[in-house]
Length: 229
Image 1 (tube, rainbow, N blue to C red):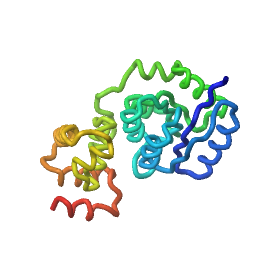
Image 2: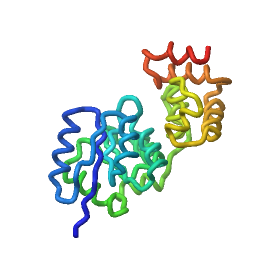
Image 3: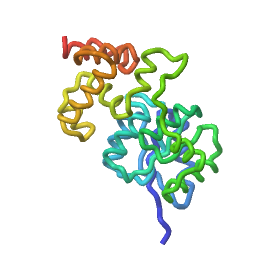
């Protein structure tokens, strides 16, 4: 009996998401198990649906695709994830690899190229070009011509970025831990690492630098700061 793979589509643009669902569902060995419109939703659905494969847009609201990949891979490491993006720079590929992506497809690729990547990933293989990026690893050197805040953001791991966003939203260590399925003690360690890397002394400092970085939407700073001031 042929294997049928259950696919979760994570894409915030309705037309693109609908097109992907239509094309993927036309394949004999794939079915659509669910759809998500932002990073938080795909993390929640991944735990409930337990798909075989996620097609993950990297540029989504609430939580980026990179952060969502890191969270999902920690919670359900058996799920295969292919990153979908308009960006082809080595930095973006390396970030996807570091977060745990199994494959990477540029959005202007043909559907045939996407299908090829899907089949490779579900066989536990990697595209040679993606494998080459993985072998090179992620450089920790400062990026020339990039702002200080962008440099700091680049220095954080995908998990630290997820913790920074959640802490800066005003969530306690216990709440962050429950969401990421980590112990409060582990979250405390991540928070200490963030303070060290970002050179701040307290959670208020994390909120302020998160605002400067654009991690928090401008509509939420007062609510977030009220918890700590």
